[in-house]
Length: 263
Image (cartoon, rainbow, N blue to C red; front, top):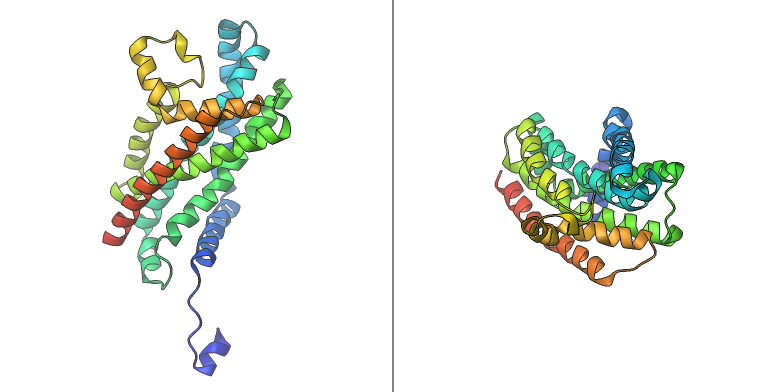
């Protein structure tokens, strides 16, 4: 940079990929300097796995070991999907501190700050999945799909969560306070995660509730991840999940950028 100034030449404008990686690295540095923010992807998933396994295992499946085989892919999805809301909180916090005003003055690709948030959060999603899998293996979970099935399941979960996070970036720009972002996020996440096939089979539910569960994208995500870890590549569920991810990214990504450009 000093050499370019002395030579009187303008440095080249950074490419979109380079800027996205830089903002992603910024998100990683925030984790490095405040490691306590990883509690939600380490302590929380462990607590959820232990609590639901030993609370419902004997009553629903006759033993905790049997229930863990059914529960673990679902609890992995629940923990990671619920973690996505912190993307919106981070966006709202940076707006409140005035950091976004500085970003908008930079000659960079406009969506790069948003993509950077999501790249940093993809690391958090992978960490939460690894922690839950480690706890599950220690408790007796044995995926019949082996390592390829497990890696494919986690990859599908991270892809869906990356797309789903665009919903929270929109709320982060739209709402005025961090608390309001968290309040709206929980109001959306609770029915999506609990009214699904994460904890029990939908066939035990009332008909009117099954109608909601059947169209819930989390239900299809759980079915796809559970199938992959069991060694069954269910094309319909995987295709449904990828389609839902593409729609979420297209709709809420577009709305996010419209709000970002108008602020």
